[in-house]
Each structure stands twice: as C-alpha cells, then as structure tokens.
Amino acid sequence: MENRTARLTILVDPVKKRIFEEICTAHDLTPSQVVRKLIRQYIIENAGDRELPEWLKG
Image 1 (cartoon, rainbow, N blue to C red):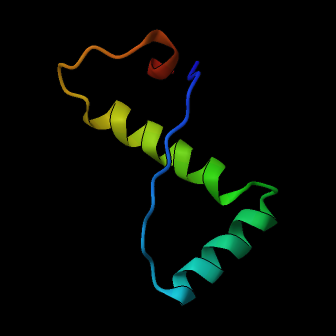
Image 2 (image 1 turned 90 degrees about the vertical axis):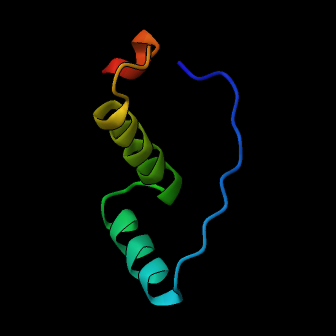
C-alpha cells in the first residue's frame, strides 16, 4: 500500500466542484477518496507495459 502522500492541486469550475462534493457526500465518501480511486483506475487502464506494484494491480 502507499506509505507517503503528495498533494495534487486541480482547478475546476465552482458548479462542478459543488455537484461533485454533493455526490461524494451522498455516497459517504470524501472527494479525496474518489479522486484516488479514479487515479488508480486510470493508471491500471493506461499503464501499458509499465511494471506496477502488486497492491496497485487490484
């Protein structure tokens, strides 16, 4: 599992941010949890021949 964290700053328009946060709350998730899940899925789907750690392979 990951043992360190790094900050990722993104810019989104306020309406999308509000809707995203409302949906996250409705699913009892934080926005950070959802973004981390999306990043993991994106990496797995697009890693190509890159060697991935076992914990990331799912």
